Length: 281
Image 1: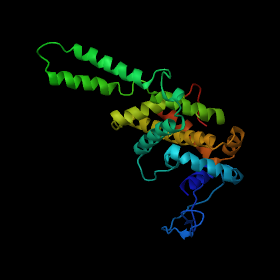
Image 2: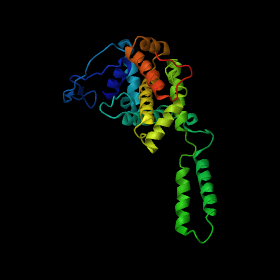
Image 3: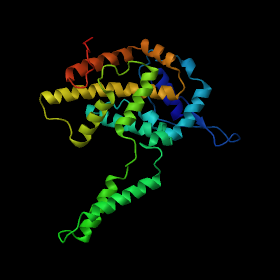
Image 4: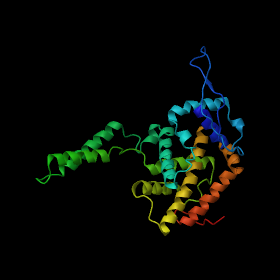
């Protein structure tokens, strides 16, 4: 039921609930009720896309996708209500990287240099380790020092041929832009903005109170809004929804319109990663 609920929420942008679900082990066993706590589906608004797109074939496709996505498709739609903006953005950037790894996992996309095999990477790491340890000649270094330094080089090169986080974000936004041109037009460089806020939060934390603090918070808000819509668009693309249908739904969606306006205003307020010529609207 989880992937079915996720696809409904993805397509309609409305929460859903399951009433009286039943399960059985096989086609000959008895149907048994599933008892759950009461859940409030919340306010139902205008559907993002018509429910006619929720076909049995599309539900089946999404159920098949769940083992691949490992549940990250559902997590990408979680609002994280009550969490700080820093937490929301950290979670969203992690989800974005995880979804890219799951949805674009073929060899050509998973490696920076596709022709370089795992064996070649291992040999390169060992050669680099040997060369680095050889530099630690002299009595001031112990064998433990050399072993620790060698392990440090191995660790540093553990993901030597992995795609960069920036390139993953670039591919996600490329997919989103093909479906919905202009979805990140307010940004001068959307992948670069996502990389900067992720690295700042992960390694430095939020700037101290003052002008830079407010500017950073504005940038975080803009990233949060845009990441949610980029991820939704990528997932709709994977659900097999054609670009014209997505564009029609977004055009009539007040939520999407508010997203564009919010991103524009917060980027202008932050002063960072603002597209050239962007004006308040």
